[in-house]
Amino acid sequence: MGLFTDEIAIDLGTANTLIIHNDKVVVNSPSIVAIDRTTNKVIAIGQEANMMQGKTHENIRTVRPLKDGVIADFNASEQMINRLIKSIPSLNRRFFSPSLRMVICIPSGITEVEMRAVKESAERVNGKEVYLIHEPMAAAIGIGVDIMQPKGNMIVDIGGGTTEIAIIALSGIVCDKSIKIAGDVFTSDIINYMRSKHNLYVGERTAEKIKIIVGSVVEDLDNPPEEMSVQGRDLLSGKPKQVIINHTEISKALDKSILRIEDAIMEALSQTPPELAADIYNTGIYLAGGGALLRGLDKRLSQKTDLPIYVAEDPLQAVVRGTGIALKNIERFKTVLIK
Image 1 (spheres, rainbow, N blue to C red):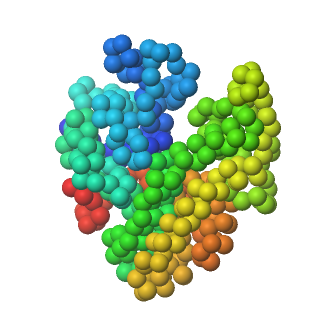
Image 2: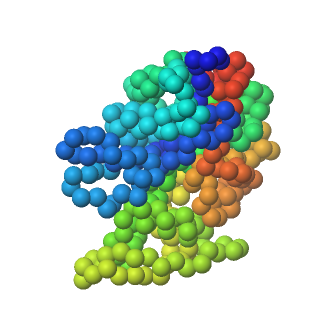
Image 3: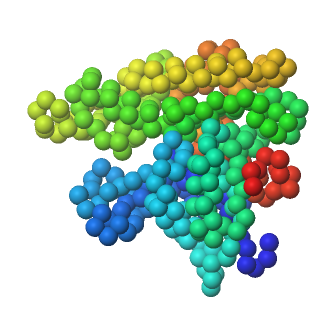
């Protein structure tokens, strides 16, 4: 690519942004920005801003620039991308900033306007050549599925803002379904459950932690996680208090949202052409994205669909890995990339 151009692959997620440079994940940070209200300047991004979430005073606000997988706050997202790119050590040592060739992944249900927003953000941070790739496609490539084959594969990518369900064959998406039930909704389900069942008001970060430590979607697990103590504010007395919760409670809290994901998967299966349905019967369903880490999800989906379910080996990075592979082999994946 020469001295003046560099290549990066970006997975702009609602919850996390990951960047690959030289085949390595060089940035893996929460998609969150802290802004000073008086000057409108960005104070912190990523992990640092995440630590501030729910703990700020009136002069600082924390924003998540991406909502449901698309850019909601144009200014904040641009500054976030800019800072994250500048934090890449190997690009940082350069005397001048190189122009970039980028591949960015986007949700499959995205509109033209939202696509343009992503593209413009990329161009403003020195992106000379910008390609876009659909998330389920990137996930499939990252899992190691050969998408060029005339063979049907089903991918379910449960991210932070959206769940992307796609049937892929001949390097194209045959039918897809994108629903806005994903990690963020699970987090608010947990907040509501703690309120209604325990009269305990917990913040987003605590709910996120509960989801990771004791999150489950079935009640009978082979090796259940240990119980967890949760601190928050008592809604009746206003005092800080602590309760102990376990995975069965969380599986009840998440039940409705998981049902909706199951319905969406069944709907996608019902729209699948018969020849591809025959392939999927043999290949099963691949799970990617952070939601795939919920305990018992593979078991539950398998019972619902009567199909084998495979969880990607590192579901959080499957999408960005696929984006990175597409970046390295731009010629090969020309048909998949949107210029």
